[in-house]
Length: 578
Ligand SMILES: Nc1ncnc2c1ncn2[C@@H]1O[C@H](COP(=O)(O)OP(=O)(O)OP(=O)(O)O)[C@@H](O)[C@H]1O
Image (cartoon, rainbow, N blue to C red; front, side):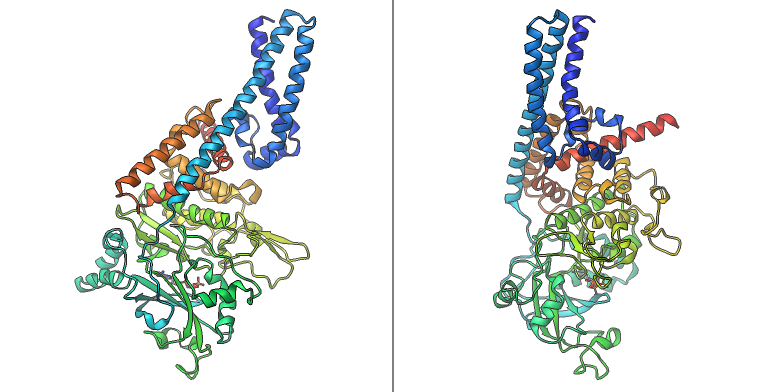
């Protein structure tokens, strides 16, 4: 063996210490990592395996360092006490290999620090409410209520206005340019057109009036039985006294609240009041009215009202009339995932995602902004756990059965059984993404797949015009086994990288982490600069980028890179073999 060869073998040996730690010393983890996360053997090598080491397995890396040090000193002792020149070269190179590990660890530390700094900058900026902050509005009489704008199985929603809550000027000119409004306008007369535009301008708020059958008429009982609706409520949504009752724990189960996010509805006010006779009530929902308003009605006298921003329509209504262009569709799928990831981070599972429960408006560039709404079926446990004890068939699994992830719909109640919701909403978001890309939802209709029994190879192919990375994300999210499915956060990171970070993905080699960190810094600078110019603050793309940067997680990002590179390798392999 030549000295040159010996050196390269030594370096190889050094690197394998790292791999040894990952795939051998890591034991169960190594197998799990390969089987669960990537289900790849050889390709892991080419996509920098150390890049996917989750923090809880840092232990292995630490012990690996110790192991490397021991080997190194033993090697050098032997190497310098009488070994042949060839052996000395091997050990010298081995030392260099171990040096590489050190270097990589150092790079990791630097990248993690970069992520933390970026996160801190963007977290400070926070998310701005679309309306001017207002201080009143805790009574129904504070609002002027207009026409009904929607109805579900639990509530009716009305447009509303309040003198104290005008929409923010300038920034909120989205409604004027709304294609959705334009669609309606085409169908209606010129007169209705202007009314439709005026409606959103004159009624910037929406009031959801819950239907109250069994909750009784005391405020406490109502708030208790409808507590999930309060999960997206802001900190000032309820009067201080009511808030206090909730905090004091009089309710038994206190719902948690999610912080504001551009892709999650914000409830500005929540209060109880006597049920009024609103437009269309007697025609549309006579049975749920109290006897005071309809002698045959079965509803209670009082109920819960939720005040939100009035959106021009739902995702379902929009998709019924439009097929969004490719980039917009990718941005829409990403927003759904961002919203779901935000909920997961806060320990909330929506459990009723469907296109009717996603509201839609447009930014000043005409890009659809999606907002997840209707938290009536959500899981929001006080300890933020997404594991629900499933000890009886009376425990609710959630809403819409067609879009229940396999692990939820197939769960069998029993003692010690838990349903894990941590990836269930991401699964539903992937199914809805088919609709966003102009396809039939594969789990709807008489011919549709059943989430209890489908096989992954039965999932319909998306049109070839859909970007390959997006197809990959949807395919991975619809894996039956949740441990083989990326989280919403990882999936969102994949789309972020695909949309804005191609540069960081090219030639991922030993400098991959540095490349990623450099890209993050550039991206932060661009977003900050755009923000300074003031024009892009309320644009969907800017919101998405800020959201990504303010929630940076190195491990999630690395996993996202791994999935993308793996997907590309597979794609390449398919093309070659075809
Ligand atoms: N903030 C809003 N702005 C505009 N329209 C809204 C808003 N909130 C709800 N809507 C409309 O009202 C409909 C019913 O609202 P929502 O889904 O919250 O009611 P629900 O009775 O809880 O529904 P479900 O039957 O899914 O339980 C929505 O599908 C939508 O059309």
